[in-house]
Length: 228
Image (cartoon, rainbow, N blue to C red; front, side, top):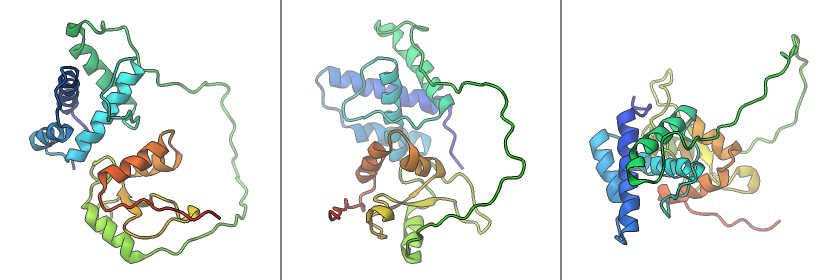
């Protein structure tokens, strides 16, 4: 399964992104999807995968204090190693334009402070908690997973593993949560890899990511919730 991005793929993505950026600076009107399609045909990934990767490149450029292409809003979910690799590729491709010098920039990733080793709890006590469970359609879940064909509908990556029954593992996500009044329909659900699913619930850019879904998944329909 093709999940990890090779250095060649990342390098080609950065080069295409910078080419797109230069064409816009020259007052040309390049079509972004043409860049995605060309990369997809060469490397065997989906166009959505490269579209999402371009948004990642925008994020790295933003962190470096450099301009990014309008319409390619920065998205962070790329991973620490991928983030650093994209930065290094940019540094190698931009110096000849006189924009940056290698070593001038560094992506700030942040670190946890390490103090005294915590003791933890050897025998955690069980507690009861009341939870609300919403009715869900098995047919909707099955349809959405089948429609995805093993690819995350957000980032375009293949499912991270195959389940015991031979099916690719993806998780079904409600764009407007059921707890917020969202519907359990195919127009409000998507199949996601675990990383994208978690970020859409807990990530710093979860609102932007939700809006991104409406752009890349044609069947989705924005739901207008009634005021309570």
